[in-house]
Structures are given as C-alpha cells and as structure tokens.
Amino acid sequence: MHTLDPGSVLGGRFGVVHVWTIVLCALFVLVTLAITLRARRTTKGAVDFYAGGRGFSSAQNGLALTGDYLSAASFLGIAGMIALQGYDGFLYSIGFLVAWLLVLPMAQLMRNTGRFTMADLPAFRMRRMRVRLACTVSTVTVCVFYLVAQMVGAGALVAVLLGLHDGGTFMGMSADQARTGAIIGVGVLMIVYVMYGGMKAATWLQIIKALVLLTATGLLTALMLAHFSFDPRTLLGDAAQASGHGQAFLEPGLRFGVEVPGEAAQTFFNKMDLISLGLALVLGTVALPHILIRFYTVPDGRSARSSVNRTIVMVGAFYLMTLALGFGAAALVGSERILSLDPSGNSAVPLLAEEVGRLTAGPVGAAVLLALISAVALATILAVIASLTLASSSSIAHDFFGHILMWGRPRESQEMNVARFSACLIGAVAIFLAVQAQDLNVAFLVGLAFAIAAAANLPVIVLTMFWRRFNTRGVEWGIYGGLSATLVLMSFSPVMSGKVHPVTEENLSVLPAWIDIQLFPMENPALVSVPVGFACAIIGTLLSAERDNARFTELRVRSLTGWGADRD
Image (cartoon, rainbow, N blue to C red; front, side, top):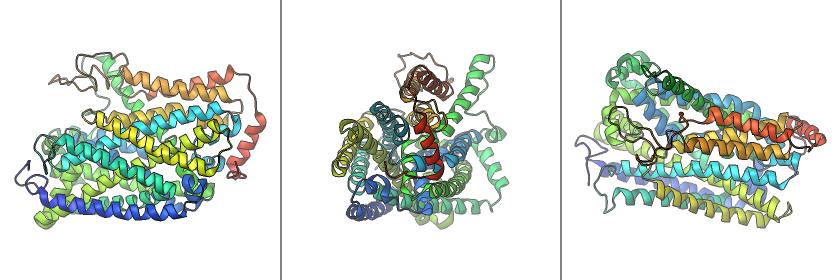
C-alpha cells in the first residue's frame, strides 16, 4: 500500500483508519436505508413524496435545511481555503452565512405561495406551460452542475483517504478505479434514497447528517482549541507563523482582490471578481432549488420562517467552527503537508483530525478521530446529492410531466412513478458526467450553480411576488437570459481557459493550455449575469401585452396569510 509519511496515520498506518472509516460509513448507510424503507411504507401520495406530508416541525426542518446547505464544499473546502489563504478563505463563510439573512424574509412568503417546486410560484399567476418548462430547465441545470461537483468530490476524497492520489494501489484498485467506484456507489445510493423514500427519507437523512456533522465538528474544534488553551490570539499567531505568509495571512489579499503592481486593469478586475463571488453566494442561496423545496415540508409559513431562524444559528455556529479549524490546520499541520496531500486544500480537516487525535490520545486517537471525520465527510456528500436529485426529479415529474405533458391533470400514482424514474435518469446522467470529469478541477461547478440560481431563478421569484406587471414572457426571458448569460460568461472566463500560474506557468484552467478563448476577465460571472437576468425579465415583460392583475392580488393575499396554499 502506498504510504505518504511513516509517522502519519493517513499514510503509514492507514489500514486501521480504513477499517474504522468503512465501519462508520456502513453504519450511516444502514441507518439511512432503514429510514428509507420506513419512509417508503408511509409515502402514500404526492404530498408525502414531494413535501414529506408537510408534517415536519420547524426544529426538524431547521436541521434538515442545515444539512442541505452544509455540503462537502463547506466542511472540507472552506476550512482548507482558510488553512491555505487565511483571511481570504473566511470570505466564503461570510457569503454563505449572510445569504440566510435574505432567505429569512422569503421563507414564509415562499411557503405560503407554492406547493411542491419553484415553478408553482410564477405558474400561479401565469398559468402557462411555458413557465413550468423554463423553471424545469433551470432547476435541472443547477442541480446537475451541483451534483457532478459533489460526486467528483466524493471520488477525490476516497482516493485521498486511501493514499492513492499520487500513485500506488489499495486492494488491487488504482486511484482512477477507486474514484470511479466511489462515484458509482454514491450515485446508486442517492437513487435508492429518492426512489423509495422521497422527501421523508431525504429529510431524515439530512437531519441525521446535520446532527453528526455538527457534533463531529464541535468535538474536533474543542479538542483543537484545548491545545491552544482556548486562546484565539495564540491560535492566530501560530497559524500566521506556520503559514509562511506572516501577518499577511491574517489580512485580505492573498487570494481575492489581489493587487497586481503595474497592472491597474487586472487589479480592478480582481476586486470586482471578489464582489461578484459574494453576489453569487448571497443571492444564489435564496434561489437554490433543493433549498426552496424544503420550505414546503412544514405545516405553514410561520414554521418555515422559524426553521430558517434555527438554521441561521446552526449555520453560523458551524462557520465559526470552520474558521477555528482552518487556522488550527494551518498552525498544527502546515500548508506544505496539506498541499502535498491535496493541492485543493480539502485534506486540511482530515489531517487536522489526525494531528489533534495524536496529540490527545496517541496513535489510537489519531486513527479514530481521522476515521470519524472521514466518514462524516462522505456522509455529507451523500446527503446533499440525495436532496439535489429529489429537487430535480420533482421538477421533472410535477412541472414537466404533470402540468405540461398531462395538462395539469395527472394521476398521483403516475406523477410519483415519473418522479422515481426521473431520479434514476438524473442519477445516471450525473454518474456518467462525474466519471468523465473526475480528472478535471470541477470546483467551479458549485460557484456556477449558485451563479445560475442567482441570475435565472431569483429575478423570477422576486418579480413574481412584488411586481404586478410581471408576466409569462418576463419569466421566460428572465430564466433563459440569466441562464445563458451565466453559461456564456463562464465559458469565456479564466476558469475555462487562459489562466496560468504566475511563477510556474502551470495551466490552471479546465481546458488544455493550447486553448485560449478567454474574453471575460473575471472568474465569477454573477456581477454581470444577475443584472442581465433582471434586465431580461423586465424587458420581456414590458414587450408583452399580457395582464393579470387579479391573480397578483390573490397571490399577495396568499403570500401574507397562506390561505389556500395547499389546494392548487
């Protein structure tokens, strides 16, 4: 077996960690499969499948929202960025947390006006099949991009944990085979969760995942801080010293908004890129499909608002812990060791768990704590992709099949069967794309999903609820305009081509080095694509003669009171 460091549990004694990780992951899967089978027996109709019977409390839904939102990018990625870039890495946490301050006022309004999917909101006013088709296209696009990134992340995490990332084999498997097997495994599990358990299974999966994630993160944070006598100044000082950047590690400018001497234009675009990133994170969260559908699982709008209040507390506490873990990894592990295992920084938390476990209880503590954190990371990925699959399959079944192909008159059994088939289809497509993209740096797909949600979905949600004049053409132009602008700008951005390391001249883009089609200077398109989405929605509305003021008045009453929300 390939080893990394004779004194490392993650390297030389990984067999022990591997056994513990497999046991903990198997326990999580068995428990959630048992819940799925139970949910299958209590899922009788569309309300059960799409909305969990609307029987979850605000506390339960708050935990589920927390589980939905805290993906592997939050757990591993942000802590890794903080460990490598210091202050700048924490900017992601700020964006993700501030976003919930916008979700809070929208939660009750969305619960009162919708039924199962995002399309229910504009379709209530427009009652046009084209509206549902546009919403389905946007929902599936966002979910597939997010799914592929999560599944590729699962494969990469398994390869790192098995010590296969830079050669070697484990039980006859190469790194590529291990990654492919992990992608297929999580893909099959997510299909099973959605097909047999629907929203009930997905919600309990998220609740369990959130409890496990918060508990494990809290334990690791407490053990790490104990090493520094719970003194933040000592932690920050040691992190800055070990980072190699000194005081600059605790100040902005290492990653975002970098000032380039002698290049005023590049410096300007770097700063605008930071603003664009924050815009995508804050505005995109409000319009993520798998977040929106969770508001429909509670009895009323007040419960939806209460669940978001609880989520804000838990998400805020989690991101404070990731801040501590990131600086703890920088101080105790060091950037060189983190980069040697995984250049993206995703290894920071597992390596920190190993080091903290060793300092606390020797080699046994290192093995157990590393296995726990590794199992939690895999469970995090598994739970998020299940919710994404449910959101996309629900849109296909409820919006496309139920209201377009069946003209709004499907039998519940038909619609649920289509939802289950759609889960298989979406899962198969995501597995195929993830296997093909596993050798690429797909971290940008998460940001792309947020940017599309902000540019395509958010204008439709906001204008439907607050602009009387808004109509069908505005919905179509807003969604397709925002979606197209985001994809086009990303295609011609440094993410796709033309970006090289300033020192080593290594190609940092997705496309090969010989392809350079970079025309847009920023890596995050939201600063341009979001205004384009709103502009398209407004222009499309003004160019149409369609009017339906009575439906808008009824929508406003419903959004404030919840009257009749579950009858359409």
